[in-house]
Length: 374
Image (cartoon, rainbow, N blue to C red; front, side, top):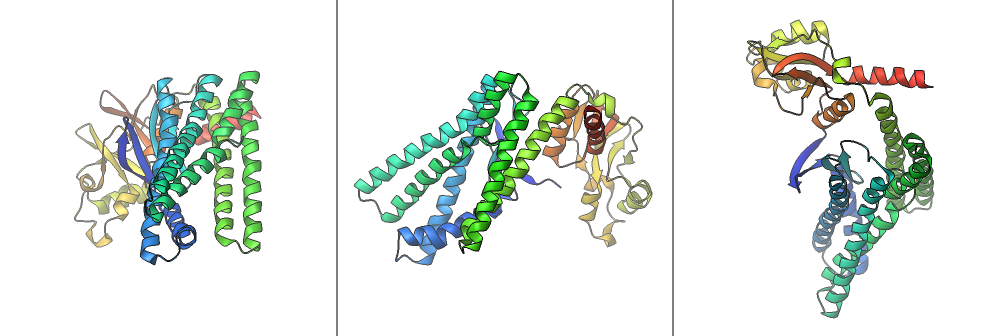
């Protein structure tokens, strides 16, 4: 199941939202409506605080999107394609197709995000001063002042030298420059990132014990996120180092089991899913590849109706997101699998199915190479 959905395209960069994003939006709105705005604007109706909080939360995430766009535009300027930007539980991530080629490019990309946040902080500070001097309503001044504070905090927070924060990327670029070893630089920067994450979690627990519940929850969530992100980022670099030269053709399964498009769902389950225990099958008709059918798509239909529907009606049609060329790298394949939400890709040549590649196949090779490299 895909965990994100597309909401816009800016500068030809797809913008997606992860479902976890709504968790943090709700927490931001609750925090502002129940704490910050009643403290800065006493005496208003609860609905006014709620409206102020919603507007502020949306502008906050617009600021975070601008932060990620700054990274992305610098990356594209240096010939680093961006698959898209995903907003999720703690901000956003620009999905790079490959790592920066040099420490200098890494440095420029990392610096772009905080620079944008500080620029926005200056803009909102100027608006705060201007609106206050022109006697704008207090609630308007409070909103822009909050955006000044939060952008300043985001800029400063991201400069902490722990990967994958921007400061950690700056640190990685510096270590990479002197050691000429990207893996080692990533390992050191990730270690700083995990130390910072553990400190945030510890301070969050301390706040909980002291009765500062909201602040404690925020810090613990951010700490856990940073710790996981640091581990994941390091694994990705190691994976690219170990699997960088492996092509799809080396790992794909050539003898692919396909299903006909007009097969009833009941037969599909009995003769394919239950018997072979695969989670998806390519759909072929007259030697033409039509799509991919998964067990999840079948489960969306009531069991009583399985005999009435065919594979053609429930399959995912062929798109560039679920097919790949045999000459592509397995790193590119993993990125496609992550973006599409499918654990498999169909390998095609001249519009003909020649194989199938699963995420499990790639991870088995990675684990084997990791064990050997130790």
